[in-house]
View 1 (cartoon, one colour):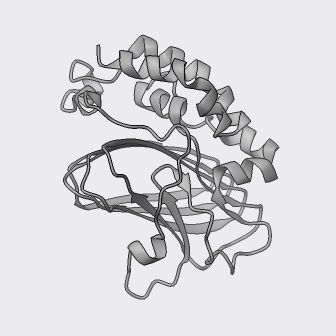
View 2 (tube, rainbow, N blue to C red):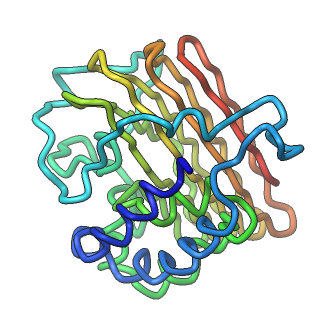
Length: 273
């Protein structure tokens, strides 16, 4: 049973998982764990995954950075996702942690937050609790449940009511590791009423090791909001990327979601609107 090693790992290191994350994220782990134990990894026996035997990807000796060991990398020197004529507000996720040493976060309108999930939860605990985990339904999808069990951090874009961000934001997901790794990252976008924002996400693997990545993105578009969400993947052939995107939209809102894969190993993108 492939799942057993991850069940044992979660139970054995639960205190470490919680201590390196935040309360609201930790509160959802038990219910997600129950779902994962019951369902297990999706296989080709499930109709939605008939052409995707996801469990095989996890049948390997994968490391997880549960104890939040620092990853030696300067993303500004390592990789730039250059898009012609794009001047963007730049952010990084290194594996499944937000890169805090960021010096390109200026220029955002007042009240807008773009940065790490743990930091946002400290600054806006009520808003974070209202939205986190409410779009990605881990009770019906074992991959989302697995991500919810292990994810330590992520990226948040929060736009308060009436604010329109004209300058695009860019998030670069960097995969870095000296051993084969399982990475579980989270992205949360909260667009309050009458707001506008554009986010471009670029994926890139640096090291020549195996990566199995789960990603859960939740987009909440309140009334008359506009969100453009673009993903550009240029990973190595040793990367398995399993992404699930959920949107929750109110009246007169508009969400554009687009994904381009230039180079990869194996990618599956689930979209639920």
